[in-house]
Image 1 (cartoon, one colour):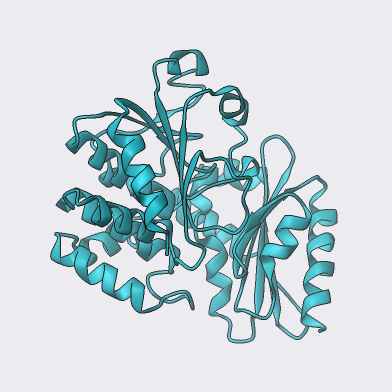
Image 2 (cartoon, rainbow, N blue to C red):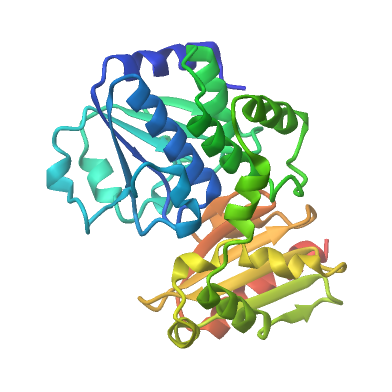
Length: 329
């Protein structure tokens, strides 16, 4: 849990600020989007100016969380236009490797930074940090913070935080789903969150393009080490042929974990700049965070990611070798 001293400092930062920027890591997932939305709704209820800023386009399945789509850095707004900001809030992130698009802006920034995060990978970016690595999702920390501050939990905020928690626990399937998760979600349901509606919005909302992209990924499945390690990949031509976008790959890596022998999984995605994005998952024996950190990435023991140089085959062999070391222990 976050200590009360830091919670008090965070309340003080927000109370004395008027024009607040809220942002998160590149390729924002449900936890990131839910936290950004919840914090922005809270700030607006406090009569603060809140600017939600993302590194890329918001995945459409999270659009219902926001009154309007967040701005995209570099497209809708530039660093020069952020001069009036008097506080920056980073949610679900605390490392430059996950903030490549706005790293330069953050390093030049002279305004205070509040971090709300649950990852062990950290560069200590905050003047005040609400960090709890035992939390299954950043949304749990935001929820605890709002309750500490005695700020109202509206229906919109409850919906956003429920999404954040549900997303980072795989809709309560992952091993990080503890009693804290269930207690918090019960409170959020009492505050107005609608689980059935949320589930439909998140998981029964594929576009034809996204579904075709998933099919393309599944066709590349390879199993290694007696089925204990599964790997899949997507190339730029897969995106061109299906009409899907990079953000459509969210949660794809979890599909192969339906195979009962799989203990570790990796999804390799060829980016437009040629780099290979590697997302990894584990059932526990393999510490994928250690692998990601070795190559400049980060995350959690059972969910992490990093970027690797091309070609794809070299990236695949690199990660396969690291997986083998741990599986062989």
